[in-house]
Length: 382
Image (cartoon, rainbow, N blue to C red):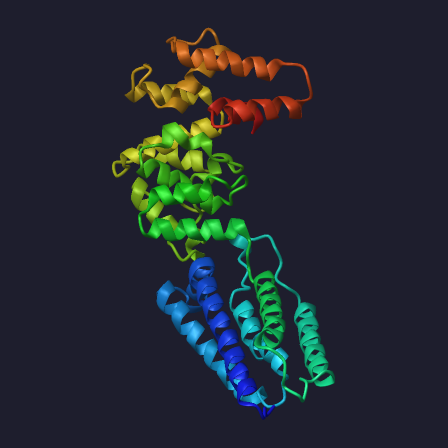
């Protein structure tokens, strides 16, 4: 659309710069800060592991290429779109960003389905309706409106396109936490792995395995294991061979950490029992086996293994002491006796909450509120 007044032509250039700047800033931040791990996983699977993903360069290159598409569309549509609707030029680049980040990975805890083809058809229809609206209500021929009059409809459209783009992309929190933890594992940032997993109530098996390895690498397996959720029990301690589909090779990393790689169709506890007797087994194998017995709620075998290398004292890791005290309370005849006055006081309080009147859900809520990070809570409420 041609404008006769110089002021209106200045407004038109300002609107185009505003829309382009908004799109570039949003696209780069979205790809670099919010979706780098998803894109790394997508590239890994499509390239079958032959290429390496660099978040910064990938975000810059993707943003630049999609921006060039927007510039091309601007020259193609600039003569017939009203100035109030110049942001429609960027609707197609926004949808391209959504298509770039909509991938789903069910094997890593992503249970949400991808948007169906009907959603994309509906978006195309909405886009056509927007264009028809622009044709039906063109800009005023007098060209006396202020810059704000032209700017605010474009800003509304940009915000709308942003919402649509984000809603169509993959924002599954569990998947992103799993992939973020995998990136931290590849960088040996084990504390960040634990931070990524701490808010996940039903982690997928891969995230549980990365949490276990990060705890052992930081020497906290016996102190913080039950601060995290373990819906898979001992089976979540180790990855499966199929987890090589993750861009971080988790089976190889855990195998190197333990000295042996877990084989297919083998229970984790049985594998750890056998592998711990092998000459190449590393000290971490014993920590994993102790954790497996605790997760299996096998207090007797846990105590037998613990007594082979440790003496019973209050310097043992907290979860080990909790398990020993619980075993002594459940089986009073067991030997040797374990004494920890402070921990015993906590256990008596836990038992009071466990046996108080009310429904099972109420008792579980009270126990988890006070003792949610203890082995006792896992033992009774798993």
